Image (tube, rainbow, N blue to C red; front, side, top):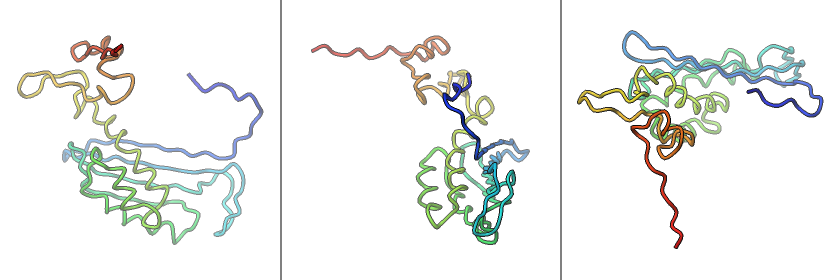
Length: 192
């Protein structure tokens, strides 16, 4: 369902687009390729010159290469369009400071610590922080069991997504309907 129509007339001024593609590599690793772009509908007279309407002000790329435990083993960052050429586009190699982090263990905090403020690019760092959930989606069904498949010991493995959002709480109706094996009773409130 789309957003409701605006009750007042409006004019589009800016588009930010984010795209994330995940690739399973033949060496068993995964590449999570992310792009963020900003485009204005009018010419922008910036400090470094005029940026013509429709040309990206930002066109930035970030690739995290991860293993199946979501450990980062390599990073590449490229800035194709920036507001300050020769300055913004020099920070890419610093994003290798993310190597060794795990997307599921304090990753967003570590991005802020290692790449926040003048240590990084605001836009690349913001892009990095949305990659954990994209990696989870990429792994769903390929690396992470989502239907309760049997593990090596023959026991069913609880689907990864349960108890990670309001709709898939194990004491909720969706889990009772779609994953009854893992449904639990809602705690009752004491009246005393």
